[in-house]
Image 1 (cartoon, helix red, strand yellow):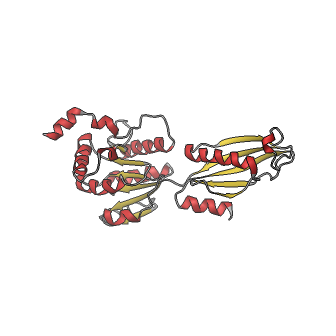
Image 2 (cartoon, helix red, strand yellow; image 1 turned 45 degrees about the horizontal axis):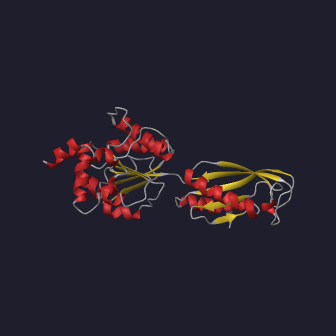
Image 3 (cartoon, rainbow, N blue to C red; image 1 turned 90 degrees about the vertical axis):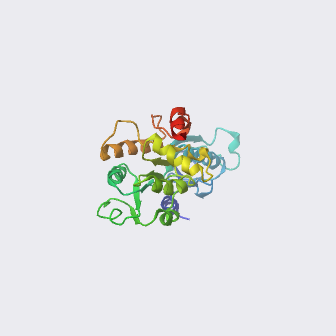
Length: 279
């Protein structure tokens, strides 16, 4: 199997992998400079950098790279350790660069109103492929979203099962009302999406969650929701809101130690809000 073809295939499927390449050779080794090994998320491999203990150590490093999404540089001296007595003692040295290969993250925007127009543009500029979903074809169309990778003008329940939402996906819920928000949030929290955000105040968010709790969904299921969505930069206009949300998405994507926050227990612990809602 060709390493490059498999890399493209995995990327198109939205799956992460790690590519290990011998970038420098000094002396004799059982492989060659530029040899490649591709490691998938499930640990399976294609290609080779020579086998043996070196490849085993590179495989371990590749699994770490997939998890952290950060590259690693490894150096091996094939003559320094008796552990390489399985035929790999060639006396040479080699450097291996292991890099994460990440799929283009997809942002699924539910609702095609004025905020969504700005969200799609800003997210696209930041490297996200956007997919817009709305049940109104007068809103969900190519004229309003020329930059979008995909547009669906149909009912949310009809479209949702067709979307390839995985661990690299971002979901933004900006529909025109609470009921539509619930229609999207319910299947959204059942996905492995990396980021789920919903527009609205804490009061609105808690109202939506309370309604879904009545349907038997446990409160813990909502802890990873980013709501109110976006970084707190005092955003008011649709463009400013879009910037704050995409900034939060970038923080999540890069695992940045920033002030982005999920709904989590901090909102649930707001006793005054809960008391008000219980009246």
